[in-house]
Each structure stands twice: as C-alpha cells, then as structure tokens.
Length: 355
Ligand SMILES: [Zn+2]
Image 1 (tube, rainbow, N blue to C red):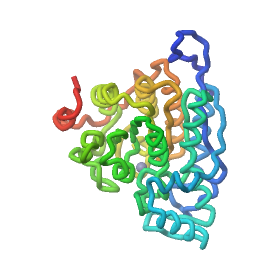
Image 2 (image 1 turned 180 degrees about the vertical axis):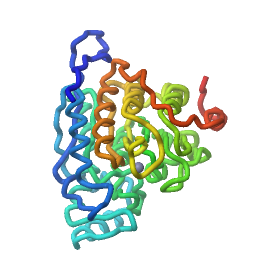
Image 3 (image 1 turned 90 degrees about the horizontal axis):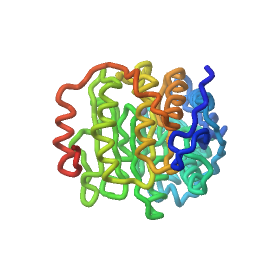
Image 4 (image 1 turned 45 degrees about the vertical axis):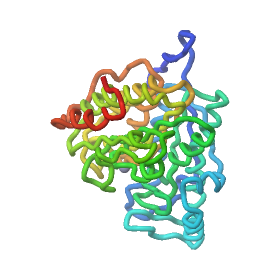
C-alpha cells in the first residue's frame, strides 16, 4: 500500500508543507537474536515493523544503534545480572525461563536495543527529526532489576527514561502493550520524575498491574494502571486516552514522552484477547503527539506477534504521530467494560484533576 504523504500539522510556525520526519532505529543484530524454533518473539517481527514505518508516507531517517555503555544499563539493572547475561550468551545461551531465550548473538542485540532509545533521544535533541521509533529486539518492559522475563533481557524504555531523568527531565511512559510492563513499573515505582501509565489486559501474564498499584513514597500517584477485561476494543481505549491520559499528561507536563508500543492488543494477535485495530493505534499516537513537546518523543517496539497486524499498526502509529487527526473515525468496537472508567476516576482523582 502506498500511503499519502502527510504535511506537518504540528509545525509551531503554522506553515504547511513542512514534512514530518521520523528517526528509525534498527540494526541487523535484532535479526540475530535467536529465541529458538516456533517462538512468537521472532526475527521476522522486525522487517514487518520497519515496512510499516517506511510506508507511512513520511520521511524516514535511519539510525544504526551502537552498543549501550554498560553504565546506562546498570543504572536500572544489577551489575551482577548484566554480567550473568553476558556470560550466559557467551556460553551459547539457552532458556533463561520458560518463555525467555537467548543465544550467542543476543548479548550484542540486547546491548544495541538497550542503547537505541538513548541514542535516538540525543539525536532528537539535536533537531534531527520530529520523533523517534525504535524497531529493535529483544523487547524490554518485563525485564526487572535482576531478572529476565517475558522475552525481555534489558528494559530498553527504562534505560532511556533513567538516562533522561538523570539529565533533569521529566518523563512520561505510556505502555500500550497488552501485557503489563512489570519491569518498568518496578523501576520507577517510587520515582516522581517518571510517570508510568499502562493500558493492558487484566488477568494475563505477568499478573501485575491492578488499578490499586499507584506507586509509593514520593512516586505515589505517578504509577497508573488501566487493566481491561478480554474483548475490550478501541472505543474504550480512545475514551481512556481522552478522559484519563490527556488530563494527567496536561498536569504532569512531561519533557519527554516514551511509548512502550506493543501491538499484541490487536484483534489478530495470537497471545491475548483484546480487539484493537490499526486505526486505534493511530488514534492513540495522534493523541500522544498532541500531548508531547515536539521532537521529544520516542516509540519503542515491545510485543506484537501477528506480522500483518504489526506492519499495519506500526504504520498507523507513525501516521498518527505525524498528525492531521486522520484517525478520529473508525474505532474498533469490542467490549466497553462496565464501571471501569468510574473506578479509575475514583482511584486517580486522589492525585489528578480529571474534570
Ligand atoms: Zn506483550
């Protein structure tokens, strides 16, 4: 499909015909990370996502990430754990747990995936592009301080968020992967410089992410979970973006917006039971783009296991981020969870003005 070029709807000068550009981080090391036969988190996911980004109709600039400096990774992971992963991969790899596998090439892949967001953020700060898209694997949001899990070795989005907060910036992470990002939540649970907001399916892996997990200490109120039942569709997600995410972002006023963009909430995904379609990802992206400072946003690939859904949803994300409100229509229907908006309103209203 050939998409129509999009003009710069967000240009602060109000000029038309200024092209929106995306900085795309990708690297062949992502194709060499071997999870074994018939594993859903497989190399073919990456070319599908890249194809989606490249056919979105906007200018794509390429970045080939270098390996992250280990100090960036040990800011959020135990040094012993990082060394364990290095020696495990060096010894040929195998299964880290039932789901999570690594091979001899996975150390290089994981270091580049962990460094990609930092390098994209630095490039954006220099004015290279309007936003970034990290199409790398292994994914990251389940990885904890000293534990690989859920196909994740190092927490890529958390490495980037920690790097940015170290520089004095406030960071909002939206995690729309169908699974709760337990690792990211844990990393910033008591840190009020990072707002973590996850939309995910309740009752599936990894089992965390209930509405009552709101952060602790000075971070209380900056950890926000929207856990939806199986069958929920885009209509609810869009309502949540407008009535929950938007007012919270307006008040938190982040310097950077990072997205943990899994595409496994798509109706076609084999691992979960939600009903989103491509246009819903486009709507979420266009909403977040409006809530972001220009050139201060990075989208990170997390999960998503249907190749066609991955390609189409990545394309819609880039098109949505480029603006023009083109996804205002065509919400997928699905289920509207009864009473959930009211329950979240009650929980969050202790910290945020939602009206
Ligand atoms: Zn997932």
